[in-house]
Amino acid sequence: NDKVVPTNEAFNIEIPGSTATNLVIVGRLPTNGMSSVIYGATGETNYSVLCYALPYRVTISNLGLKGAGFVGGVNIQRSDEIRILDNSAGIGSLSAPKRRIWMNNASNFMFAAPFSGSAENYVVEPGEAIIFVRKRPPSITWTNKIFYSIPGKNVNP
Image (cartoon, rainbow, N blue to C red):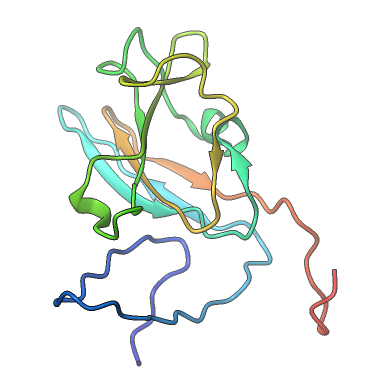
């Protein structure tokens, strides 16, 4: 009960046993953009697990990654990559990502196999864990934009 989980970081909780367990997580509504570092280093592939921690559905193209320094390439091996964690079976990081998305040289987000085509309008749901795969230096800073009216003291917009 006394552990604080930063609102811009994703996490995986594994509860041993085979019975259903309810878990209540109490959080707060962000009222300004949250910045997170996506690490990059020479000769290394870096994985940053972050959370889209806003109560608003947003498309990949509106996440602000292009302006943050996300780099494309001729294929997924040469591009930075986004992996959306699949938690439909309740095993999160132990299963394959729900979607793998990369950016081509024309700065368009594309689906990786087994899907194909444009991913520009793919919707990221509130609270989804996003794995950023950075394949080059330098580290970049990604800031979640606020796309909703900030509530007042009576929780009204």
